[in-house]
Image 1 (tube, rainbow, N blue to C red):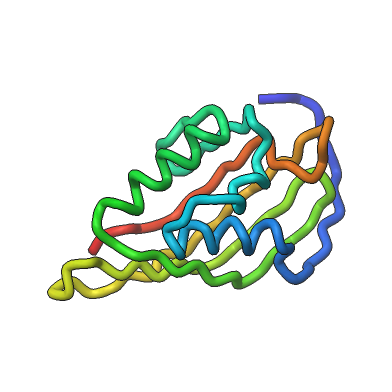
Image 2 (cartoon, rainbow, N blue to C red; image 1 turned 180 degrees about the vertical axis):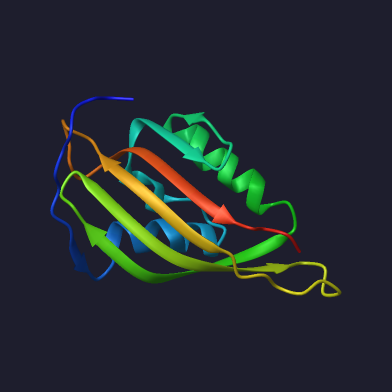
Amino acid sequence: MSDTANTLTFTRKPAPDWLLAFWKEIDDKTFGKGFDCFAEYAVCNLGVADWHGRETIRNNLRAFIDTGFTALHDVIEYWDGGMLKVFRGIVTMTPDDKTKKPVQPVMTHFFYMDEKDPTKVRRWIGAVGPVAF
């Protein structure tokens, strides 16, 4: 832990196009250009995941979604703090097995933007859950 204190000002805004495009790629199961919001060397810590690199993030999310459900991400709120973006939402996870009911876990995600290219995410830390069908 760092002893350095930082102060950021956050502004509540509509979710930006890059974030909506990213969620849409997952929801549509296309996993294409929406992942371009990540720097090539981005790191993702989603729950217990520790994924390094944009392609690793893309491939591991594809493998997770391919476990038998369809996701639909809804933005509840988005806060822009410059180099740190915070997203809160709900994901509706509908199992392919129609005997199971959909679940709607809450999500909170922190997107740290890249210092060299602030249009790209360099680190994504997220929590979703509980995710039990």
